[in-house]
Amino acid sequence: MSFDVIVIGGGPSGLMAAIAAGEQGAKVLLIDKGEKLGRKLAISGGGRCNVTNRLPVEEIIKHIPGNGRFLYSAFSIFSNEDIISFFEGLGVKLKEEDHGRMFPVSNKAKSVIDALLKKLAELKVEIRTNSPVKDIHFDDGKTSFVELKTGEKIKAYSIVIAVGGKSVPQTGSTGDGYAWAKKAGHTITKLFPTEVPVTSFEPFIQNKTLQGLSLRDISLSVLNPKGKPLITHRMDMIFTHFGISGPAVLRCSQFVVKAMDKWNLPEVTMSLDSIPDKKEEELFQEIAKLIKAEPKKAVKNTLKGLLPERYLLFLLEENSIDPSIQCSAVSREKLRSFARSCKQFQFKVNGTLSIEKAFVTGGGVSVKEIEPQTMASKKMPGLYFCGEILDIHGYTGGYNITAALVTGRLAGLNAAIYSLNENRP
Image (tube, rainbow, N blue to C red; front, top):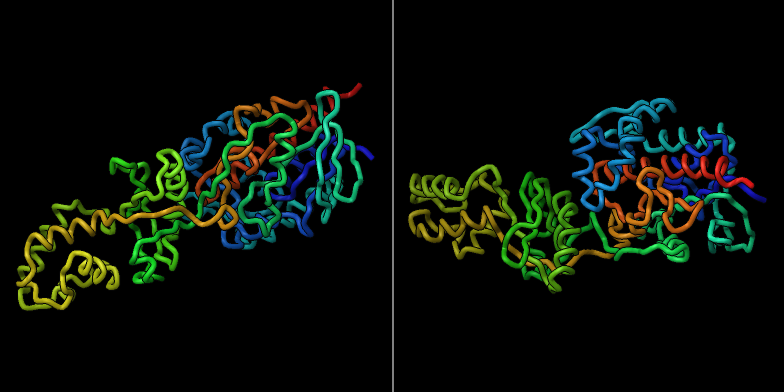
Protein backbone atom coordinates (compact mmCIF):
# COMPACT_ATOMS: atom_id res chain seq x y z
CA MET A 1 0.00 0.00 0.00
CA SER A 2 1.34 3.45 -0.81
CA PHE A 3 0.33 7.08 -0.31
CA ASP A 4 1.45 10.41 -1.66
CA VAL A 5 1.71 11.83 1.87
CA ILE A 6 1.73 10.21 5.29
CA VAL A 7 1.16 12.53 8.25
CA ILE A 8 2.21 11.09 11.62
CA GLY A 9 0.41 12.70 14.56
CA GLY A 10 -3.19 13.83 14.94
CA GLY A 11 -2.69 17.00 16.95
CA PRO A 12 -3.29 20.57 15.68
CA SER A 13 -0.34 20.61 13.26
CA GLY A 14 -0.97 17.07 11.97
CA LEU A 15 -4.67 17.68 11.33
CA MET A 16 -3.86 20.90 9.50
CA ALA A 17 -1.09 19.19 7.48
CA ALA A 18 -3.40 16.34 6.42
CA ILE A 19 -6.10 18.82 5.31
CA ALA A 20 -3.60 20.98 3.40
CA ALA A 21 -2.19 17.91 1.62
CA GLY A 22 -5.68 16.60 0.86
CA GLU A 23 -6.69 19.95 -0.63
CA GLN A 24 -3.87 19.55 -3.16
CA GLY A 25 -5.46 16.34 -4.37
CA ALA A 26 -2.87 14.08 -2.75
CA LYS A 27 -3.70 10.61 -1.45
CA VAL A 28 -3.14 11.13 2.28
CA LEU A 29 -2.87 8.84 5.28
CA LEU A 30 -3.06 10.32 8.80
CA ILE A 31 -1.67 8.03 11.48
CA ASP A 32 -2.03 8.51 15.24
CA LYS A 33 -1.09 6.15 18.04
CA GLY A 34 -4.02 7.19 20.23
CA GLU A 35 -7.70 6.36 20.09
CA LYS A 36 -8.83 9.88 19.21
CA LEU A 37 -7.51 12.68 17.02
CA GLY A 38 -7.12 16.20 18.38
CA ARG A 39 -6.48 15.29 22.00
CA LYS A 40 -4.33 18.37 22.60
CA LEU A 41 -6.93 20.59 20.93
CA ALA A 42 -9.57 19.10 23.23
CA ILE A 43 -7.78 20.38 26.36
CA SER A 44 -6.45 23.67 24.99
CA GLY A 45 -7.85 26.91 26.36
CA GLY A 46 -9.31 25.06 29.33
CA GLY A 47 -11.37 22.81 27.02
CA ARG A 48 -12.67 25.77 25.00
CA CYS A 49 -9.87 25.58 22.39
CA ASN A 50 -7.95 28.82 21.92
CA VAL A 51 -7.44 28.36 18.14
CA THR A 52 -5.21 31.38 17.51
CA ASN A 53 -4.48 34.94 18.54
CA ARG A 54 -5.53 38.06 16.64
CA LEU A 55 -2.61 40.30 17.62
CA PRO A 56 -0.47 41.68 14.74
CA VAL A 57 2.11 39.19 13.44
CA GLU A 58 4.93 41.26 14.95
CA GLU A 59 3.33 40.92 18.40
CA ILE A 60 2.68 37.19 17.96
CA ILE A 61 6.34 36.64 17.16
CA LYS A 62 7.31 38.54 20.34
CA HIS A 63 5.12 36.09 22.26
CA ILE A 64 7.07 33.15 20.80
CA PRO A 65 10.45 33.69 22.52
CA GLY A 66 11.72 30.31 21.28
CA ASN A 67 12.69 30.96 17.63
CA GLY A 68 9.54 32.92 16.80
CA ARG A 69 11.49 34.87 14.17
CA PHE A 70 11.83 31.68 12.14
CA LEU A 71 8.08 32.00 11.46
CA TYR A 72 8.24 35.34 9.60
CA SER A 73 8.32 33.60 6.19
CA ALA A 74 5.58 31.17 7.20
CA PHE A 75 3.30 33.99 8.39
CA SER A 76 3.78 35.80 5.07
CA ILE A 77 2.25 32.72 3.38
CA PHE A 78 -0.36 31.63 5.96
CA SER A 79 -1.02 33.98 8.90
CA ASN A 80 -3.15 34.04 12.03
CA GLU A 81 -5.81 35.91 10.05
CA ASP A 82 -5.75 33.03 7.54
CA ILE A 83 -6.30 30.59 10.43
CA ILE A 84 -9.40 32.59 11.42
CA SER A 85 -10.71 32.53 7.82
CA PHE A 86 -9.91 28.80 7.58
CA PHE A 87 -12.02 27.92 10.65
CA GLU A 88 -14.85 30.23 9.68
CA GLY A 89 -14.78 28.55 6.25
CA LEU A 90 -15.32 25.23 8.06
CA GLY A 91 -18.37 26.73 9.76
CA VAL A 92 -16.68 27.38 13.12
CA LYS A 93 -17.66 30.89 14.21
CA LEU A 94 -14.96 32.52 16.33
CA LYS A 95 -14.95 35.32 18.91
CA GLU A 96 -12.14 37.47 20.26
CA GLU A 97 -11.41 37.64 23.99
CA ASP A 98 -8.77 39.40 26.09
CA HIS A 99 -5.24 39.82 24.67
CA GLY A 100 -6.41 38.81 21.17
CA ARG A 101 -7.25 35.20 22.06
CA MET A 102 -9.68 33.59 19.59
CA PHE A 103 -12.21 30.97 20.73
CA PRO A 104 -15.11 29.19 19.06
CA VAL A 105 -18.42 30.96 19.81
CA SER A 106 -19.66 27.56 21.07
CA ASN A 107 -16.96 27.65 23.82
CA LYS A 108 -16.37 23.97 23.03
CA ALA A 109 -13.18 22.43 21.64
CA LYS A 110 -15.40 19.66 20.25
CA SER A 111 -16.87 22.00 17.61
CA VAL A 112 -13.33 22.73 16.32
CA ILE A 113 -12.31 19.05 16.28
CA ASP A 114 -15.58 17.95 14.64
CA ALA A 115 -15.14 20.54 11.86
CA LEU A 116 -11.58 19.34 11.18
CA LEU A 117 -12.66 15.68 11.12
CA LYS A 118 -15.53 16.50 8.76
CA LYS A 119 -13.09 18.26 6.42
CA LEU A 120 -10.71 15.25 6.49
CA ALA A 121 -13.63 12.99 5.57
CA GLU A 122 -14.65 15.28 2.68
CA LEU A 123 -11.09 15.17 1.36
CA LYS A 124 -11.06 11.35 1.70
CA VAL A 125 -8.01 11.40 3.94
CA GLU A 126 -7.51 7.89 5.29
CA ILE A 127 -7.23 7.86 9.09
CA ARG A 128 -5.62 5.19 11.24
CA THR A 129 -5.89 5.58 15.01
CA ASN A 130 -4.42 3.18 17.59
CA SER A 131 -1.54 2.73 15.15
CA PRO A 132 1.80 3.50 16.82
CA VAL A 133 4.69 4.04 14.39
CA LYS A 134 7.81 2.00 15.07
CA ASP A 135 10.14 3.70 12.58
CA ILE A 136 10.50 5.78 9.45
CA HIS A 137 12.73 4.39 6.71
CA PHE A 138 14.82 6.29 4.17
CA ASP A 139 16.26 4.77 0.99
CA ASP A 140 18.56 6.31 -1.62
CA GLY A 141 18.74 9.53 0.38
CA LYS A 142 14.98 10.18 0.53
CA THR A 143 11.87 9.14 2.44
CA SER A 144 10.65 5.65 1.69
CA PHE A 145 8.14 4.09 4.08
CA VAL A 146 6.63 4.09 7.55
CA GLU A 147 6.81 0.95 9.67
CA LEU A 148 4.06 0.43 12.25
CA LYS A 149 4.61 -1.43 15.52
CA THR A 150 2.49 -4.23 14.06
CA GLY A 151 5.24 -4.72 11.43
CA GLU A 152 3.12 -3.30 8.58
CA LYS A 153 5.08 -1.15 6.13
CA ILE A 154 3.37 1.71 4.29
CA LYS A 155 5.11 3.43 1.41
CA ALA A 156 4.99 7.22 0.99
CA TYR A 157 6.56 9.75 -1.34
CA SER A 158 6.61 12.30 1.46
CA ILE A 159 6.22 12.10 5.23
CA VAL A 160 5.16 14.81 7.66
CA ILE A 161 6.27 14.35 11.29
CA ALA A 162 3.75 16.10 13.55
CA VAL A 163 4.05 14.08 16.74
CA GLY A 164 4.59 16.96 19.20
CA GLY A 165 7.21 17.26 21.93
CA LYS A 166 7.37 15.62 25.35
CA SER A 167 4.92 17.76 27.34
CA VAL A 168 1.36 16.69 28.18
CA PRO A 169 2.18 13.01 27.42
CA GLN A 170 -1.43 11.94 28.10
CA THR A 171 -2.26 13.49 24.70
CA GLY A 172 0.27 11.22 22.99
CA SER A 173 3.28 13.58 22.96
CA THR A 174 6.00 11.30 24.28
CA GLY A 175 8.96 12.40 22.19
CA ASP A 176 8.74 9.61 19.59
CA GLY A 177 9.71 11.85 16.70
CA TYR A 178 13.17 12.89 17.89
CA ALA A 179 14.77 9.51 17.06
CA TRP A 180 13.28 9.59 13.54
CA ALA A 181 14.55 13.13 13.01
CA LYS A 182 18.03 12.14 14.19
CA LYS A 183 17.99 9.16 11.85
CA ALA A 184 17.35 11.58 8.96
CA GLY A 185 20.42 13.59 10.02
CA HIS A 186 18.74 16.29 12.12
CA THR A 187 20.07 17.97 15.26
CA ILE A 188 17.78 17.91 18.30
CA THR A 189 18.47 20.95 20.49
CA LYS A 190 18.33 20.46 24.26
CA LEU A 191 14.80 19.71 25.46
CA PHE A 192 13.45 21.57 28.49
CA PRO A 193 10.07 22.38 30.07
CA THR A 194 8.44 25.74 29.30
CA GLU A 195 5.11 27.19 30.45
CA VAL A 196 5.51 25.17 33.63
CA PRO A 197 5.22 25.85 37.40
CA VAL A 198 8.45 26.80 39.20
CA THR A 199 9.85 25.07 42.31
CA SER A 200 11.56 26.52 45.38
CA PHE A 201 13.27 25.38 48.59
CA GLU A 202 12.59 28.70 50.37
CA PRO A 203 11.39 28.09 53.96
CA PHE A 204 8.15 30.04 53.38
CA ILE A 205 7.38 27.67 50.46
CA GLN A 206 8.38 24.50 52.30
CA ASN A 207 6.35 25.60 55.35
CA LYS A 208 3.37 26.31 53.07
CA THR A 209 3.07 29.80 54.62
CA LEU A 210 1.52 31.30 51.49
CA GLN A 211 0.14 28.13 49.87
CA GLY A 212 -2.99 28.83 47.82
CA LEU A 213 -2.55 32.62 47.91
CA SER A 214 -3.20 34.33 44.55
CA LEU A 215 -1.74 37.73 43.72
CA ARG A 216 -3.39 39.69 40.92
CA ASP A 217 -1.68 41.93 38.37
CA ILE A 218 1.83 41.70 39.80
CA SER A 219 5.18 42.03 38.04
CA LEU A 220 7.46 39.01 38.29
CA SER A 221 11.08 39.02 37.13
CA VAL A 222 13.84 36.45 36.70
CA LEU A 223 17.18 38.02 37.69
CA ASN A 224 20.63 37.31 36.27
CA PRO A 225 23.60 36.73 38.65
CA LYS A 226 24.18 40.52 38.77
CA GLY A 227 20.62 41.13 39.92
CA LYS A 228 19.35 42.58 36.63
CA PRO A 229 16.01 41.33 35.19
CA LEU A 230 16.31 38.86 32.30
CA ILE A 231 12.55 39.02 31.76
CA THR A 232 9.57 40.57 33.54
CA HIS A 233 5.93 39.57 33.15
CA ARG A 234 2.96 41.42 34.55
CA MET A 235 0.10 39.02 35.18
CA ASP A 236 -1.36 36.95 38.05
CA MET A 237 0.43 34.29 40.12
CA ILE A 238 -0.27 31.80 42.90
CA PHE A 239 1.87 30.29 45.67
CA THR A 240 1.76 26.47 45.81
CA HIS A 241 3.04 23.73 48.12
CA PHE A 242 6.13 23.25 45.90
CA GLY A 243 6.76 26.79 44.63
CA ILE A 244 4.85 29.20 42.43
CA SER A 245 2.46 28.94 39.49
CA GLY A 246 -0.05 31.00 37.50
CA PRO A 247 0.27 32.96 34.21
CA ALA A 248 3.22 35.23 35.18
CA VAL A 249 5.16 32.23 36.50
CA LEU A 250 4.51 30.05 33.44
CA ARG A 251 5.85 32.80 31.20
CA CYS A 252 8.96 33.27 33.35
CA SER A 253 9.65 29.53 33.66
CA GLN A 254 11.76 29.05 30.52
CA PHE A 255 14.01 31.93 31.62
CA VAL A 256 14.56 30.19 34.98
CA VAL A 257 15.66 27.04 33.13
CA LYS A 258 17.86 28.97 30.69
CA ALA A 259 19.53 31.03 33.47
CA MET A 260 20.33 27.93 35.54
CA ASP A 261 21.78 26.32 32.43
CA LYS A 262 23.71 29.35 31.14
CA TRP A 263 25.43 30.23 34.43
CA ASN A 264 25.44 26.69 35.85
CA LEU A 265 23.44 27.76 38.91
CA PRO A 266 21.67 25.54 41.45
CA GLU A 267 19.21 28.39 42.14
CA VAL A 268 18.04 31.59 40.45
CA THR A 269 16.63 34.70 42.13
CA MET A 270 13.18 35.98 41.24
CA SER A 271 11.80 39.37 42.21
CA LEU A 272 8.13 40.06 42.90
CA ASP A 273 6.66 43.55 42.58
CA SER A 274 3.20 43.39 44.15
CA ILE A 275 2.35 47.08 43.49
CA PRO A 276 3.73 47.66 39.97
CA ASP A 277 1.91 50.95 39.32
CA LYS A 278 3.77 52.86 42.03
CA LYS A 279 7.48 53.69 42.34
CA GLU A 280 9.20 52.61 45.55
CA GLU A 281 9.75 56.12 46.93
CA GLU A 282 6.15 57.13 46.17
CA LEU A 283 4.88 53.99 47.91
CA PHE A 284 7.12 54.61 50.93
CA GLN A 285 5.84 58.19 51.30
CA GLU A 286 2.25 56.97 51.02
CA ILE A 287 2.78 54.30 53.70
CA ALA A 288 4.61 56.77 56.00
CA LYS A 289 1.69 59.21 55.66
CA LEU A 290 -0.87 56.51 56.55
CA ILE A 291 1.20 55.42 59.56
CA LYS A 292 1.65 59.00 60.79
CA ALA A 293 -2.06 59.74 60.48
CA GLU A 294 -3.09 56.88 62.81
CA PRO A 295 -0.37 56.51 65.45
CA LYS A 296 -2.44 54.43 67.89
CA LYS A 297 -3.84 51.96 65.35
CA ALA A 298 -2.26 48.54 64.74
CA VAL A 299 -0.02 48.56 61.65
CA LYS A 300 -1.91 45.70 59.98
CA ASN A 301 -5.20 47.63 60.27
CA THR A 302 -3.74 50.87 58.92
CA LEU A 303 -2.21 49.09 55.93
CA LYS A 304 -5.25 46.88 55.28
CA GLY A 305 -6.18 46.94 51.59
CA LEU A 306 -2.65 47.76 50.44
CA LEU A 307 -2.04 44.04 49.71
CA PRO A 308 -4.02 40.80 50.17
CA GLU A 309 -4.09 40.22 53.95
CA ARG A 310 -1.95 37.07 54.06
CA TYR A 311 0.73 38.65 51.90
CA LEU A 312 0.63 41.89 53.93
CA LEU A 313 1.16 39.98 57.20
CA PHE A 314 3.90 37.90 55.59
CA LEU A 315 5.84 40.97 54.36
CA LEU A 316 5.43 42.75 57.71
CA GLU A 317 6.91 39.73 59.49
CA GLU A 318 9.67 39.40 56.85
CA ASN A 319 10.70 42.94 57.81
CA SER A 320 10.51 42.23 61.57
CA ILE A 321 7.39 44.36 62.04
CA ASP A 322 4.87 42.93 64.50
CA PRO A 323 1.53 43.27 62.63
CA SER A 324 -0.33 44.18 65.84
CA ILE A 325 2.15 46.85 67.00
CA GLN A 326 0.98 50.47 67.11
CA CYS A 327 1.91 52.58 64.09
CA SER A 328 3.83 55.06 66.25
CA ALA A 329 6.25 52.29 67.30
CA VAL A 330 7.44 51.46 63.76
CA SER A 331 10.69 53.10 62.65
CA ARG A 332 10.98 54.83 59.27
CA GLU A 333 13.84 52.46 58.48
CA LYS A 334 11.56 49.43 58.87
CA LEU A 335 8.82 51.12 56.84
CA ARG A 336 11.30 51.79 54.04
CA SER A 337 12.39 48.17 54.14
CA PHE A 338 8.73 47.06 53.99
CA ALA A 339 8.05 49.34 50.99
CA ARG A 340 11.08 47.79 49.25
CA SER A 341 9.65 44.30 49.89
CA CYS A 342 6.34 45.35 48.34
CA LYS A 343 8.26 46.42 45.24
CA GLN A 344 10.98 43.77 45.09
CA PHE A 345 10.45 40.77 47.30
CA GLN A 346 13.31 38.50 46.24
CA PHE A 347 13.36 34.75 46.68
CA LYS A 348 15.27 31.79 45.26
CA VAL A 349 13.87 29.16 42.92
CA ASN A 350 15.62 25.92 42.04
CA GLY A 351 13.98 24.81 38.79
CA THR A 352 10.61 23.74 37.48
CA LEU A 353 8.32 20.75 37.43
CA SER A 354 9.21 18.09 34.85
CA ILE A 355 8.83 18.43 31.08
CA GLU A 356 5.88 16.02 31.28
CA LYS A 357 4.08 18.52 33.57
CA ALA A 358 4.84 21.47 31.24
CA PHE A 359 2.31 22.90 28.78
CA VAL A 360 5.01 23.28 26.12
CA THR A 361 8.32 21.61 25.20
CA GLY A 362 11.34 23.86 24.68
CA GLY A 363 13.95 22.62 22.21
CA GLY A 364 13.45 20.12 19.41
CA VAL A 365 14.39 19.73 15.74
CA SER A 366 16.76 22.60 14.97
CA VAL A 367 15.04 25.22 12.81
CA LYS A 368 18.39 25.89 11.08
CA GLU A 369 17.83 22.57 9.29
CA ILE A 370 14.28 23.37 8.12
CA GLU A 371 13.23 25.39 5.05
CA PRO A 372 11.26 28.30 6.58
CA GLN A 373 8.80 28.65 3.68
CA THR A 374 7.95 24.97 3.25
CA MET A 375 8.86 23.18 6.54
CA ALA A 376 10.89 20.75 4.42
CA SER A 377 13.92 19.03 5.90
CA LYS A 378 17.20 20.41 4.54
CA LYS A 379 18.69 16.98 5.30
CA MET A 380 16.23 14.53 3.77
CA PRO A 381 14.13 15.07 0.62
CA GLY A 382 10.45 14.26 1.15
CA LEU A 383 10.56 14.80 4.93
CA TYR A 384 8.62 17.64 6.59
CA PHE A 385 8.23 18.77 10.19
CA CYS A 386 5.55 20.85 11.90
CA GLY A 387 4.26 21.75 15.34
CA GLU A 388 5.93 21.22 18.67
CA ILE A 389 8.57 18.76 17.50
CA LEU A 390 10.33 21.83 16.06
CA ASP A 391 12.48 23.99 18.31
CA ILE A 392 9.79 26.69 18.46
CA HIS A 393 8.00 27.55 21.70
CA GLY A 394 5.74 30.38 22.77
CA TYR A 395 3.76 31.57 25.74
CA THR A 396 0.26 30.24 26.38
CA GLY A 397 -2.52 32.37 24.89
CA GLY A 398 -2.95 30.88 21.42
CA TYR A 399 0.67 31.39 20.31
CA ASN A 400 1.83 27.76 20.27
CA ILE A 401 -1.30 26.57 18.51
CA THR A 402 -0.84 29.37 15.95
CA ALA A 403 2.73 28.16 15.29
CA ALA A 404 1.43 24.56 15.04
CA LEU A 405 -1.35 25.41 12.58
CA VAL A 406 0.85 27.65 10.40
CA THR A 407 3.73 25.15 10.21
CA GLY A 408 1.22 22.30 9.72
CA ARG A 409 -0.40 24.11 6.81
CA LEU A 410 2.94 24.67 5.05
CA ALA A 411 4.25 21.18 5.78
CA GLY A 412 1.13 19.46 4.38
CA LEU A 413 0.85 21.74 1.36
CA ASN A 414 4.49 21.33 0.37
CA ALA A 415 4.65 17.60 1.14
CA ALA A 416 1.77 17.18 -1.34
CA ILE A 417 3.39 19.41 -3.98
CA TYR A 418 6.69 17.51 -3.62
CA SER A 419 4.95 14.18 -3.86
CA LEU A 420 2.68 15.02 -6.79
CA ASN A 421 5.06 17.07 -8.91
CA GLU A 422 8.69 16.57 -8.14
CA ASN A 423 9.09 13.04 -7.01
CA ARG A 424 7.37 10.98 -9.66
CA PRO A 425 9.47 8.82 -11.99
